Image (cartoon, rainbow, N blue to C red):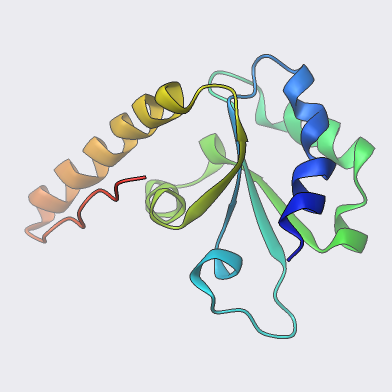
Length: 127
């Protein structure tokens, strides 16, 4: 993965004040890539219509050609949100503190549900 190229491709989202951050997650981060691995990109945009954000992306980037699998964090299930929060690198963020505060509420919900199920929650990574 050419992280600088991915970062450049998604740079235009900085013009949208509603977008908080753009992350890469999944096999590119865990190191479990194979010949057909794509590049999982997650856009964090609280309180925004996810389809509007995706339309911006699809109008500017040929995601199929670039092998990007683009998602909006807010559309994920809690399980997938947790996975992203445990396995991501930031391409860019408008405000790191705001991103961590936003993620905190999702981590808390995940941990509360883990306690309710009687399983141990994973520790919160320090970034």
